[in-house]
Length: 202
Image (cartoon, rainbow, N blue to C red; front, side, top):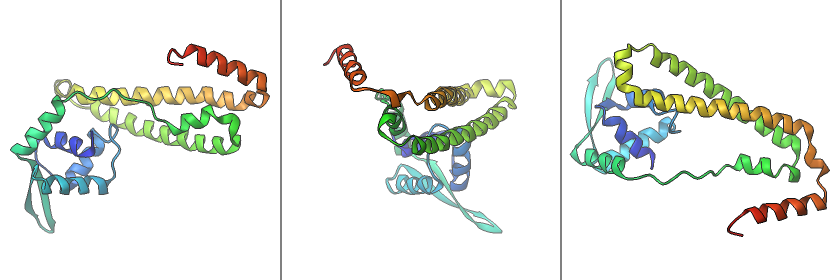
């Protein structure tokens, strides 16, 4: 999956200008897919070059003309192909978790500073998605239930962020204890042996 697939799905709902796509993306898919304004405009241009979307110049006086993008039949087919294709199961690749697991090998203060930055980012994101949740909840119920798929993705994101911040509290307690400073060669040997025995592939 790539940003271009997300944009195809977004345009599947209807035509939109580049500006409207950038703004709308923040409120519908921004919490699902991380993309900068530059990346969105770049991929819109690529989709147009590849013949998957049409672009119409619309006068917008006194402002500059707008580029309005719309799926064409080829783009609609590409969107449907992607939607119908099964996705690969997700795998966890987290550099932060690797650092946490290796805390006994690095400077605690360096990790704490980095971890604090992650917590601040998650807290800010949680504030943003709570605000978005309030927007969804302000919709008439008859309209909201028709777009419940979008709302459920938002609720999933909120749950993930809340769980991460709860987990972060446990990490803070662990960092305060600093029990890894007491690791002995014998501890390391026991740990390694037990972990290896528990792995059916070892």
